[in-house]
Length: 221
Length: 222
Image (cartoon, rainbow over all chains, first blue to last red; front, top):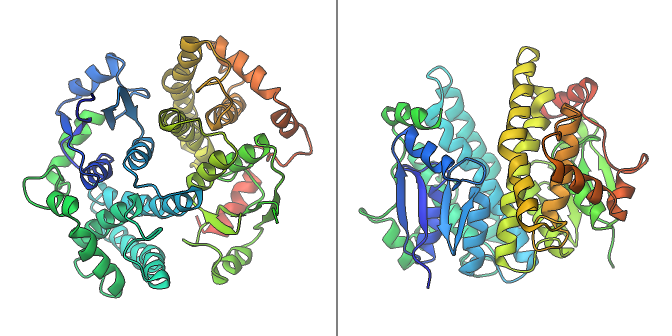
């Protein structure tokens, strides 16, 4: 009945990447429409497609959804990646919100001015290894299960894997002190839909390079 | 068995205010434990109460919940303020994210350097009147209902009212071009639980002043 979801964003990770991960993990094929110039963005704004004039925007089930969290919540609930009851959803939400915080730090690293980069990198490593990773390591240790919540694959596992991989791009040995997160990473990476997404040629986007920043600034500023 | 939820935060609006609004609108009584000093925060951190070392934290239904959105989603769902199905939830989420962005701008205003305040205030007013309020005005116009989603009070309505009142504190006539939002404000403010919350003596917190900014900077080292 419905066509494939259609993602509107620039050709890079940004705030759309978590949505790509979630759709891919759920085994949902999707199309992408890339914004290359400011005119592309303006056109979308002018034709009323963007509720708050912003992307990400995902056409899905007859809606033009905006706001990455709203989109993520909808996809997770639709494809049964949101736990079985209110309390499981609460845990998933808590874990995902913190991962989003860490993602923000990782994402903004490329945009830091040269004189702030080293300090920013230190902050990332500090927060990742002292505030966030210990929590997930402990969660996995305490229940001894394969997945973060409810002994079942959920949005929390997908988002955590995404962030672990991004953190490793920043500092390859960042998981050195977290054996359970290391095995979690391997285990979740091997889930067939995710394994496919991690292969070259998938719709997963590469890290933002500094050379791409000017083009991005042109579209959004 | 049902104890009152217990809120842990500073004695001011910040990120906890939307949670206070939602609980109050749902008619849920709650207690508050205020963080007054750095030591109070350290104590909470050291006794393992804060999953990610941060507040807000709300003790509710045997959980020590953190992360504002997680807490709000839980309360909304628990008290039937989250729509009747996935699509209504999608709309509520979209609307709430918009008002969250707007209120976030307003919340940070007192913390901005003095020489940027005027510029930031102008940006808030521009965003409110050209990006956000037109969306909610149109939503109300298109369906002609009293509430934003599903012809029933939801988290989206409560959050929008909070945002409107905060925006009016920035500029009293900010709703002048939005007749339906004015009517919405009047109507929603008169819902008994919300009316009660809007009266003096409730747990609603006043706008952030310089004194509070100083306290927050000290406690959180910012």
